[in-house]
Amino acid sequence: MPKTASVRPGPTRLAEPMESLGVLLRDWLPRQRWFAGKDRPVTELGLLSMTELFPGCLHLLVHAGHTGVPSPGGALPAGDCYQLLLGVREHPSPRLGRALIGRVQDGPLAGLTVYDALHDPRSAQLLLDRLRLPGTAGPLRFDCDPDQEVPAGLVPRLLDAEQSNSSLVYGDEYILKVFRRIQPGVNPDLEVPGALVRQGCHRVPAPVAWFQTKHPFRATLGVLQPYLRDASDGWTLALHALAAGDDFTVQARALGAATADVHLALASAFPVGAPGENGRTAAAMTERLDAAAHCVPALQPFVPGLRTAFAALTTCDAGPPAQRIHGDLHLGQVLRAGREWFVIDFEGEPSRPLSERRSAHSPVRDIAGMLRSFDYAARQRRPWRPEWARRCREAYCAGYAARAGWDPRKKHGLLRAYETDRAVYEVLYEARHRPDWLPVPMAAIERLAVRGD
View 1 (cartoon, rainbow, N blue to C red):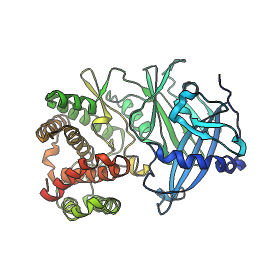
View 2 (view 1 turned 180 degrees about the horizontal axis):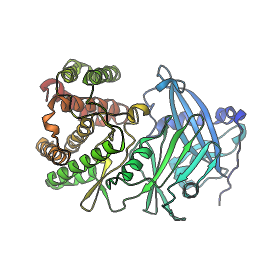
View 3 (view 1 turned 90 degrees about the horizontal axis):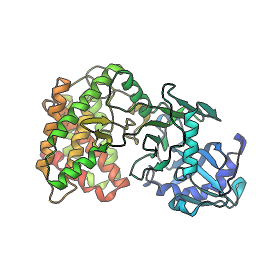
View 4 (view 1 turned 180 degrees about the vertical axis):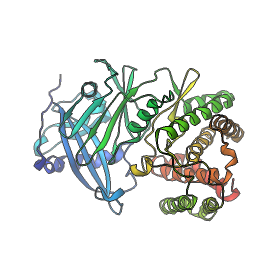
């Protein structure tokens, strides 16, 4: 077995390993799928905490500073906080491949090679062992549901899907989501599923174990949940239907009903607010539009037309009361197992502040996200099939209305505004992470701005 290193830097020595790791991480971090600052120069790297989880594995919280980027709530200097689990060995396995970060030249880790430990089966298994038994490691705390017993020895595999976090599947029985971009507070992906299960909602997998930190602030770091091994995500199912020329309206209608079930359970689990303050919502949407147009010049010609969608909020029906919602609902966030739909990933949009993601919003925002997702799916094939997307959207809203008692299609002003806001978010996201996909939301932007649909 390759030799591992045991490193225990005290709090006064945090700067020392960062001096040597900094050069390697400056190159490695921007190349990671989950790194949010790809379009902004990293001007600073600072080590906020370092804990040895077990010999050969270091847990780090790293601050990546970006020039001119405001800090959410002022909790940290301008930039983002990221969670890293670094393997440290003299002679790492060549099978680690792209997980390798590099060889440290000086400092307390001099001569050792560091790598992303989540790619290492040994480290992944030891991480599960920490989750199976409650306890602490420095500022880290590991907790679990006392009524759930997680077996030892489950074989881990790291999912390779595009996402803003990292996920490990253990023995096709559990999935561990390791959050990468860390913000102060309880992550909704721990808070919400637990609350929904207590409401008797069967549409979400319950948290089994989780870990958190109390330094440099209290935050959720990862959540372990049951893995639905025979399930398929909605995005994959929709693309298969499109490829086969099959109708998807039955599935879309059932998905609408499942979304309503989750919204009803959320309204019971968390305090419900008054009907949406549409004036304030319109101002926030307009502000996001202006910021996105500054970053993505292709948006600028459509800004005047898009603003009309937001301005209409001040005169349209206020809609249903504000409540806790999913926050980032689309076909990739739902799973179908047998005849049932399940909703996962309640983290919300990772680019938005955690306080915003945990606050109450109109449920129309979730509905608009799913409607945009049907359009995304339809545009994955040539020629584009707008009629397929239209039928799915209609069926989804009909299924939602049958369960929720109100029809999203009758809230035209609200739905248009929220769909426009979602499309603006998509433009900014694709420009930063997947430029080849930018034409998909831009087509919706043109439709929403010019035709006012």
